[in-house]
Image (cartoon, rainbow, N blue to C red):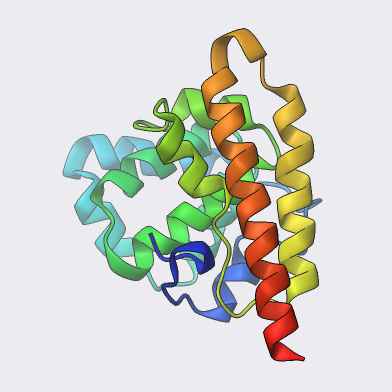
Amino acid sequence: MRARGLGLALAVAAAAAVGMEKPERVAPEKGLAQVLAARVKRVGAGAVLREIYAKPGWSDVKAGIVSADPDWLEVGDALRAAAEDEAAGDLDLAFAEAIGRDPERVLEYARGLDQPAAFADLCGALPVDAPVAQCQRALARRKRALLKLPQSRWSGQAAACSAAIDSAYAQLEEEDAEGE
């Protein structure tokens, strides 16, 4: 995963594109998610990803995922399974931000996140070059959103996510202290 917590680099633009600073941003038109979902079924996620990645519509895809809208999460999950490199990092950051909106929905619509460790990786994911305060706000949103998770069903994921967030906070504090 291309995230601060794992020491890999992502472009600063990804932070703005996935809505880290604008939690009130609404999802792009829902019809676009349905069109993309149909296209994924017809030609495959890899082909759709190659068509839209690094084009103006890519930011709409990321914003849709951040919104935690079920249609967008389904599209994002399909694309995530086919993504590599920067595209995979972009999608992971979008899903990480969606956790701050509705973690249960993210868990229900994203394959592989039923494993606590995989979910935790997303919980602590942050863009490398984003300002510390912006990253802290993103982590705080995710931590607050964990309170929405039904503990009986998602207790392992909630505990792993909370630990990953705490670790990301600690790492941010270390980086901030080193930068002074």
